[in-house]
Length: 470
Image 1 (cartoon, one colour):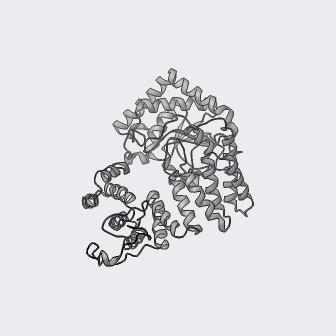
Image 2 (image 1 turned 90 degrees about the vertical axis):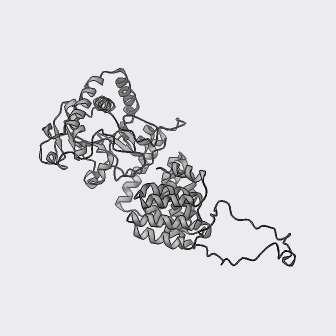
Image 3 (image 1 turned 60 degrees about the vertical axis):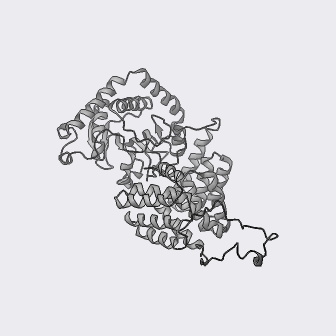
């Protein structure tokens, strides 16, 4: 169940019965579904203490004990009766000028014995919001940090973290004033960097350049100098796009990372598996683009077993040797192949340095998950591992050589053979040829800003911050 489904439930019934549904889901062990329901409900009802308490329980079940404690502490300061929307502050039932005479209305206005509610402090709101950022619950984090900012509007740390949450949700224009406010007490590299990114992504190039110049006045360490150098290149790439009114996913992947995108696509939340035909055509497009850019490899590598069948199909299609990854000293020009860019997370330090004899091709790159590095060539953007086989290949495969396909299961053997056959059959297909030509027309004049085959210009691969706009 996604957030949209949860919101539909909330809109159909605004009562706390929704939380009873969430509790039932939790009792059934359906933590993700329960989480979606509670999150949607709490976003609609920010001051409902029961929602905060239930979310705390869910975080505890998910192994986030520190976040759970902070949310539970916050929940104690919130009411558990009728929800009260922050966006709609309570108005007094009468103005000061029309205040009624209490002696004339005693019978109509019975006294209540409800104790005054203690409002959460900015510290409690901040600590809970900050922990939610760490859990990548940016919508809820922004909700709480926004309240903290109302209480302490000049507090730089609150503004920075609120700006970061908004930026993480791609709400760049809303994030900018919070980063600007955080800078009022003094410039620091991280805040200026985030501000620069926001101005870049809303294409305010002049303000982005001004921010970059402010960064150059700081005393920077080597890592910060590299980041600054990268951002200078980003602005130069962005300048080449000035004439375009709207940038595509291909444009943004090039501007932000200098990477090639073989098959541009719109951002949708559909979890669609690729099939042998679409994968085969992708390999045919890859071959055409590599040939056109004079970047054909002498060898195809794979890192994880999940990528092994794809690497096998690609190696046979390109008619080059296939091997597992054997470190950074390989003399041949190798194309390291991954089915899903998240595979980079494990060995990312190894791949940080841009080696002259190695490039990385990832069939799919996530739309929304930040990664330590970004590949030079990306097939498509997606949300899940795209291959039509199970993630676990036989244990025997770990001991075999790459050129021995007998260790593939019959299903994987069939799939990889079908991919290879489709790549060969579709290489001369008009749609494939058109896709290759469009890519070459796009990238040919941009070679100096591409990371592929440009180790002199780019000593290391940049971090992937998942800020692709579409």
